[in-house]
Amino acid sequence: MSTTTQRKIMIAANWKMHLNVSQSSLLIHRLHERIKTHRSVEVVLAPSMLVLQPVSMQIDRRKFHLAAQNAYQVDEGAYTGEVSFSMLQDMVHYVFIGHSDRRNKFNENLDTICAKMAAAVRNGITPLLCVGETKTERLAGETTRVLHDQVTTALANLTAREVQEVVIAYEPVWALSSGTDFMHHETPKPDEIAKAVETIRHNIKELYGVKASKQVRVLYGGSANASSAYDLLGVEGVDGLLVGGASLNYHEFSAIVDAAFRVQQEE
Ligand code: PGA
Image (cartoon, rainbow, N blue to C red; front, top):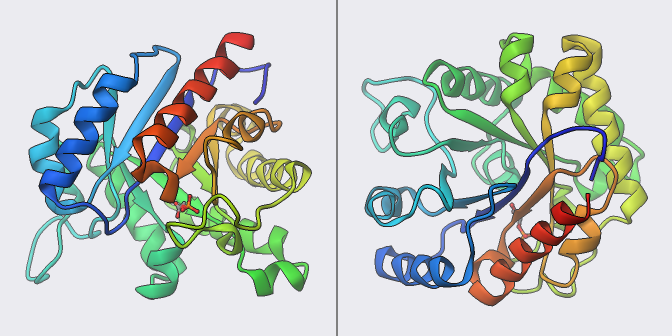
């Protein structure tokens, strides 16, 4: 965490393709009971597309913000099966863009991701851009280049002012859990995370200036859990966590939010 800026900590839950409407509703009910409103910590929930609408009526918006896990870059038209950013406008604060599941399992390339970033901004939704290297790229010493390419192409059509608002999650693909092994999965060392976050900010600084690079929030994601959250949030430059597997368990997730609150209080 950086002590020199006022960036608000974000803890975001990526439920991926888990939990139907009633299961989601139950989890939210439990999270409502367990999580206190923290003005200094923003808690974001990303349920499946199907669940967003009913859940948007249930949540206390002072406590939780909603994110969509994906959206389509064209506002409307003959795109069978897709949901556009414009359709999500009143329902979500954020849309995840470029998650490694989308890049690797749905073949989203840099151009698609760039178009989605522009579509989000055009529709008044804040993009939460995920970037990160694969194991092969890491072993080949290509992490810095991969982050550079992913960050700069994604932001290419945005102005410096728009870039300031973006949230970026550094999610090394090799550190992501399968959903259940988040307690034991291999994760980067704190100095590796700090270096990746620094690389991301450096790329932004080069293209959009110091203000944008200082204002952008950068999260870490990859097997984060209740035991690791406090230390991860202490890494220089890290403004929050994107949590997958551990976010499906309300004990784990609320403990992660508590850790964020402790870190914030100690600042
Ligand atoms: P994980 O997932 O916490 O289960 O590794 C994070 C993510 O994929 O966003």
